[in-house]
Image 1 (cartoon, rainbow, N blue to C red):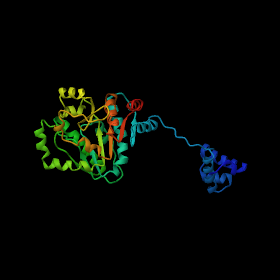
Image 2: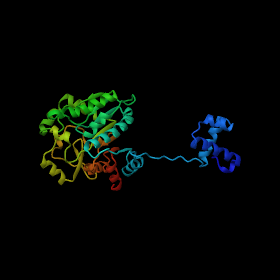
Image 3: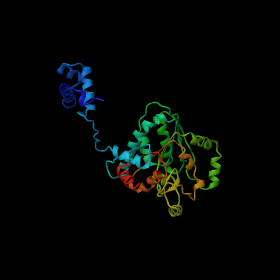
Image 4: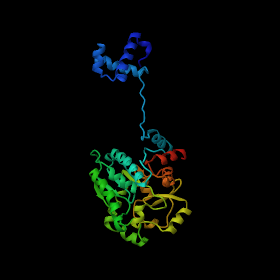
Length: 323
């Protein structure tokens, strides 16, 4: 390594002068070479020496609204492979969903080309804003987008689940695979009949092939989309889950404050990916925010349900402070 001991005083002065012209005055290397009457290779060598000697020190100044330090703390605290922290522009739910969706879209655009089969949940507003914000990523390995939770419901909500899958398939250039059944059946017999259908069994064959899974994170209070769809539990079932310590769900699979699965009264009525199948997917990205979801998000992180998280700054700071 270069040191001040093996440079003469004249050489040190030259290195310092080159560094000042380049970093403080903004001159290009050819201009510096002409001005000092040295070769361009000599200018490059002097700039390298300036860094090695500590004459020039590179620092990264994080701009407002970018949370690189907080993301790193979040990754370290929960053993995550990735974290994205965003700051909503306003206090409304739409501001929150839009900010999280924009952050998640950029993150997914980066990793999607490496993933051949991508699963996406239903009924998540955060995921809805995510796929809406996505741009076509570079051409990659992605060939199938799989809906991993039944998406048939009532009224206009029917379209939400299929639009998530369809939009993600459109931007990635992959084939959509829809799970056109209810997320929660009326009873176990209805689920059994639907699970025997060839189209349903075809979708389930993909669950063990997933390389990336995009997950919304729910609480015991259902989201607006889920509530409107009719794929929701009763007040009595909610109360029962609370008594068992449940704090949140992914794909209608509930868990407690440390991420341990909590059996639900409707466990055998859900048509979608199972808890153990989820945990076998190499990349599991949770997309959720808002303080009302703090316990649900933290439980998912504590239990290792997620390998990456996209959330807002307020939730991220509390997650780091209260791991």
